[in-house]
Length: 146
Image 1 (cartoon, rainbow, N blue to C red):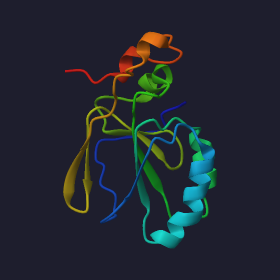
Image 2: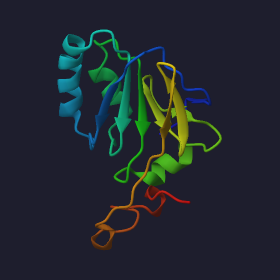
Image 3: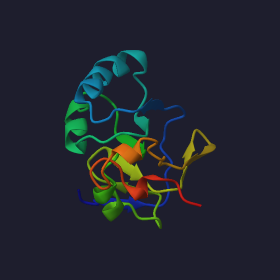
Image 4: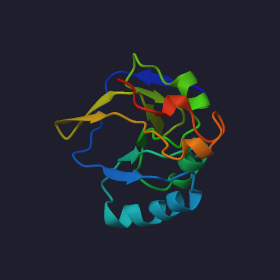
């Protein structure tokens, strides 16, 4: 995964956004969303994805190509490949673009949506980490720090 662009100011033009979560790399959910979102909210251009996103961003770009969605801001959760994410997410920037549509948010990140300030914190502790292998099922970086 490569960082294509960094941005400190996250202010999408939308007054409202779609909020999704826990995709867990499920391409089927993205394809379903691409079919129903234009009918439910044809004016939306932004998705906020809240945790446990991990999916190939190029697949997401392709699945949403026939919609008006032009950005997805991802608040990273605990089930992410933190070994890859940590290399591109920069704490000095609010977001890093990793594909045409997908932006990964730093921790913390502040967004302005419809004139309102929103904070994305991201991360969580895997409560089942005792049964997982560090670096292959959970990552120390996934937890929120002080």
